[in-house]
Image 1 (cartoon, rainbow, N blue to C red):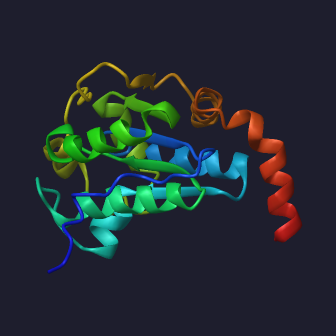
Image 2 (cartoon, rainbow, N blue to C red; image 1 turned 135 degrees about the vertical axis):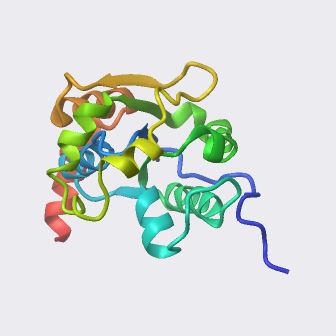
Length: 194
């Protein structure tokens, strides 16, 4: 009988690995910030994108209890257990992903940093127009997906607003997560190995 991916064994993460979770509505800048973190840090950062696992790998609709929920949690744990700093980014509705996210927080809380991008709807539309997939969906779909300040319970998510650039947000997140002090070492390792 296959193991239910939503039920994960206790973590074995490398002591130095860090988890960063970036949530927010569509076109709020999550992927851009995640990529900026990786670019600044160098090798050693895994990006776990909800859209990639849900829409591309599984081609699944976003609903409670869907297979992508467990796959996202499993992928984060696997990367952390193998020494990668891990940036999980996605809309990650609290009603659909809250239990999985709570499990990650329980297991990696002392090494995790949680962020919510609180960007006004009209600004997300402007940002969406600049995305490669702008022709795939538009205002109507984005209105259906929109959840105003879908914060997780507990008040531990840090808020980033529209006034903060992606570069500034990435720097702030890296500083908070303890990744900023590791940049020069990681970047030199990345250059040495290609």
